[in-house]
Image (tube, rainbow, N blue to C red; front, side, top):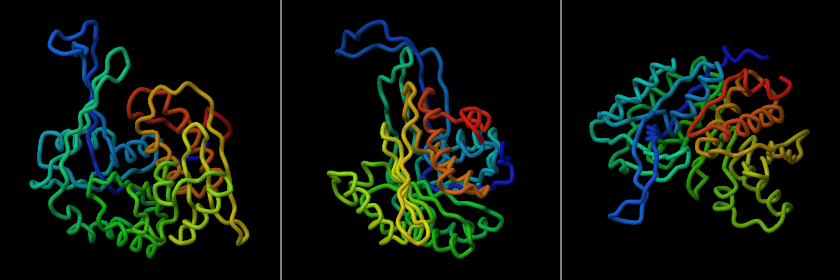
Length: 313
C-alpha cells in the first residue's frame, strides 16, 4: 500500500456542519399527516468543504482546511471536530456570518427530513485571506477548491492562478452554470447534471465527448472528470497530444446513502495525485472510494485500508 502520509493537501471552500438526529417513527401526528419522530441520539459531522478535508485525513494524508464560519455555536462545533480529526485549522470566524448547518432527521436509517440553516454572506468573506492562502501553498502537493455556492470562493480565479504559479496541483468541485471562473484548474470534477447545465443536454455519447473536450479546451483544464452516478465516471484528458477518454464503470454494490460521495471522490483523487499516481489510476481509485462510501450512512469517510482492500494497490 502506498503511504499517503507524505501527501499534504489544502481544502478551501464552503465549510458546513452536518447534524443528524436519529429516532423511531411509530405513529402519525394528530396535527398533520406527518410522522412523529422520537429522537434517541444525535451526531455532528463536518460538512461541505470540511467533509473533503475529513476524507483526506481519514485516508492518512496531511489535511488542511481553510474557510469561514460564523462566530456561533455551530462554528465552535466545527472547530472542535477539526481539532479532534487532526486537521490543520485555518478556518476563520466572522461575526457577520452565520455557519451553514444541515440537519437531517432519520428513523430506522431512513431520512425523513433535511432542514438547512443558511444565509448568503453580505460581504466577501475570504477577500482578506488571500495572502494567508498564498502563504499556505508552500510545501503543498495539492489544493482542493470545494465550491458549494455559498460565497466562500468568490475569489477562486485568483486562488487557481496563485496555486498554478507555485506548481501546486489544483482540483475544483464546481457549482453553478458559469465554469469560466475555474479556468486553468488542473482537474474539474462536475457531476453529469452540473456538466450538462453548462454545455447543454447531450443526446449521445459522442456528443458528450465532443462537448467535454470542448469545455476542457476552453477552460485550459488538464483533466475533466464527469461523475455519472450509476454509469460510473468519464475522464476527458490528453495523451500524446491527442484527446482521450477513459470510462470507469460504477462498482456494483448496494447504495445506502449518496450524500457526501462527491467529497470522497475528489478527496481520494487529490491524495492519489499528491503521491504522484497517474491520472487514470487515480480516477479508478476515486471511483472505488465512491463505491464504498455510498454503502455507509450519512456523510462518511473511508480509510486507506478499506480502499486498498477492495483491490490491488
